[in-house]
Image (cartoon, rainbow, N blue to C red):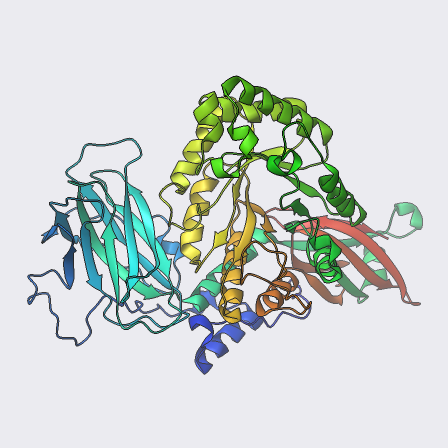
Length: 616
């Protein structure tokens, strides 16, 4: 017997080309949604159109000395060269579906004699980018003319419009003498008269090599096909429900037991997905009935937006109050929603309250110890996770004043007071390839240093405050973090776009990438309702309680990621289906009278089919 199909497959709306589907694209997307795609029968896709290439234009490589349209930016000189040992395809090249990957050509442009960080090379985008379409920027860069430095130098690829506005791009911290792949993304809201890519960043005197830089529209349909296949492997499992008599004393052997239920109607319902999705709440938001209604229906856990932060609980030295935090935790208890602990400390100086910034070193150390003991001991056993010192990639307030070991000390002392919660690092821009301070490699190095100092790091928080996300860029970052073998959570997800369709697409990109990645164990949204979010144009729920397109997309994805199946028990007393990991109930109408039997079971991760004995 084949495994049963899920009941009522979701006809998910998937918008290609920024919401401007052709009928053909819409048909492909609907086919993928309804049938799960046909990956094994795909034709080899064509290479995507590179907007940097000249198709029938007047510019030629011969006309500009072989530069192919590249020009010097600032004080630099350009020349063309060939590397006879070009870089290999990246390990994640196969994770960019929808296009055959070109091997690096070996031909590169060298920008030399640079006098400033802003000097480099630029090139006009030959075909104007379309509004509200997400574009992927990718290529290889290498640095020359500088000694090897710890951590390397940042290289920026920026996309600028005719008025000089930066609309996106990417950044890479490159090691001298080594080719590295740079990736980024951008999107324009209106038709620009002109747009260009601009490469710069290393210190003066450092030469930049650029090879095969490409600008291509993201193939969303191909990415969806890829993620559906990946999700099925990562988040689902084959299940066999095996119906037996409770004991041989019932007077029937296994064959008779199977006969008793043969052909019986069965229905399987998933009541909880093992992949939690939560949201932040605040003192004001839980006063809004529409907020509470959506939160309690669609989220599994909570995090307090501000009410547990040090600047909130002790705005004035010595006046400590957890009243608002306790109120929110009591709210979550009433609705049976676990709460994540956010956050004990915050490493960014402008997020530290003035009285703390005014302390000398001895006073600050005493205040840190008091904060640790007061907060962590108060809530022993209450939180499954703690974010210990927020945003250490972007701030070093405590480390600069109390020494390099203070961050690890915070982890060690928290674990000594309350050993139960997993202790997280938490930072932003790690997933976006746009911040030289927050590369995945730097994040891994931070975790490694904390562990070397005895910190029991239990998880990695990727905040996820994103703009024009690109799937394979996100996946690259998650892959690098996964090498730590620590669980990854998306801890503060929000997307901002005034256009509702674009916002819905961006939210779906982030949710699908996270859900499909085996290292990610949960997602937290940093707000969802208009008027109760720190970021504008990010709402799933409008102020009047109606759902935005992003809200409908979110609800649809949660339905898609819930498995229901129905059918009949086969002659062997078995019912087979494939479902998402989580908690289930099965309803069986057995016997001549159609008496209903109801049982509960769990589906955990595993490669082999799960056989569940359902004793009657």
